[in-house]
Structure formats: structure tokens, C-alpha cells
Length: 74
Image (cartoon, rainbow, N blue to C red; front, side, top):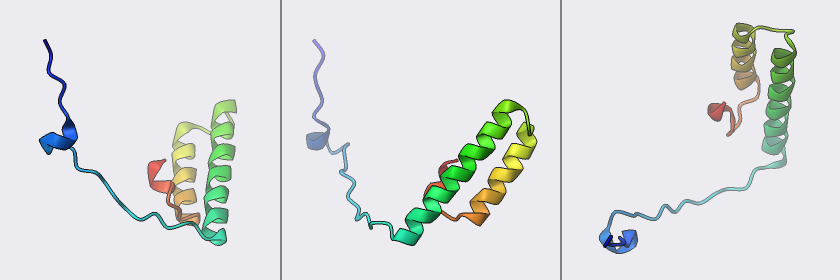
């Protein structure tokens, strides 16, 4: 019979608590612009207008042009 482990009781589980600050309208706009640029660039790659290397260069430039919270994820 398998024993079910209660992670909170065992000490293996540490709840992560952080304060999430809401984005300002300017930060939200920057996030949107980054995602829009990424979508356009991805479409260009998908239809063959640019190659993968060009896509990666453009996305690197987008990360610099639109400093966002999401940029490191892409």
C-alpha cells in the first residue's frame, strides 16, 4: 500500500509568497507591443518571408526595444 505524503507536513513544500505589483498602463502597452511584434515576426517566419536566423535576430532586437516582464520567456 502506498503512503500518501502530505508535503506541507513533511517540510518538503515551502509555500511561495510574493507580492505582485500591478502593471502601469505604460508597462501594459509595452507588453502588448512586444507580443504584437512577436506575432508578426512569427507569421513572417511561418510563411517563409524570413529564415530562422533572421527570426532570432529580430526577436533579440524586440527584447531590447520592448523591455518587458515576458521578454525573458521568449
